[in-house]
Length: 495
Image (tube, rainbow, N blue to C red; front, side):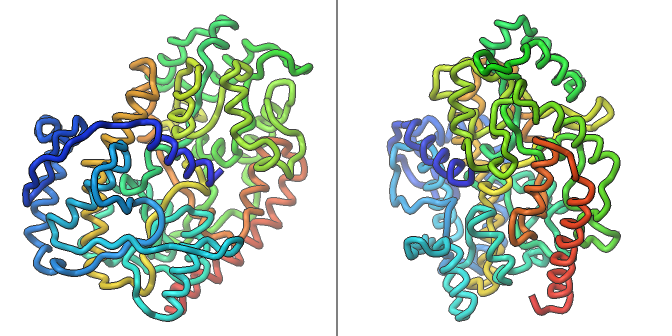
């Protein structure tokens, strides 16, 4: 799935050409005749005006301390283009980097990142070697959870950025749930937000095939109204799905695809990782009644092959049918509700299918908001190597990049892909706003050296809850032992 997210980003870049022409360059900002980045557009947008004022103030305070310094990025999330390419997203990345150079006077370097075929991920291996050797080659590393950030953390290669003076994680360009879900013993090792190329593409949602809904007399506007009124709950979701009859012989439509169990947990406001009074993470070692009831209820529904498209063998939950197969079934009007990422929604706009987008349902109407767990392994994160080249430059550039991402990446991806090309109706645009507003992350994917704990949760919720209690207790103890060891290293300064 991580590879699909990355491939999706590249596909979107290739599929959305943009014709631009260079304009005059100003010291405090970049102006072009591009429809996306025109000065007139920026002046009419209060969000962008706010960002430009913020960047101008940041430059006044910090330019003298960073000017002439080198800032080196390794990994995904940036571009090595030296001019406009005519590609919507690549040009957004180009202008973000150009602004950093022009406004702050830094020398931007995108590090070469070659690896050995069949070996570790090159970004991981290059950063690990840099930390081991202490050569201080890189300021910031960008990568996916699975291939880069998690293994670098487990190898003790990342720096705690919680003490950075310029970095302000309360700003809207950073994911606001990070302070609640991503701290370990008071330390912060992973960042994400609009700085990430996948930020607008990695949130889980519910897509529905409008033709299938029409075929079974489902009120499409009624679903949108449920969402708007805060009444879109799983009970309503399952009730509407019952309009599609049992598909035991596989010749008709299914109600659902096989969803990710941890996504359903979070949608019901059940975290995977908890935090004690000191802010240290842990996972419960005893299965709560709330989670047990959820697994029993949901596995009976999603584990039923007459209702759910997918595989029956638990061990194949992530592999046998990749989500391209579910996408094809959805485009061929074989699935009513398709639970996947907003990136998949953008991708499906290239297919001949008329569909709508909804947030994941709530547990009940008392739940404050619709919660969207992110794609746990393919989402891009940003981290700082322990051997960062000039911590102050890293500090300033991270904050500046975050802010400039609102100015450039948000229009390129959010406004022009998700809210325009990816939606056929105004209701879907509102739905995307609600989905992104409920983005949440869970530290468990960074803490576990393998996927066994999360796989257990997925299996119990999406397939069968049989023996869930005993396996949960065993896996929870093992998981907590590993977390405790890591916390001690951090507290003792040996991480």
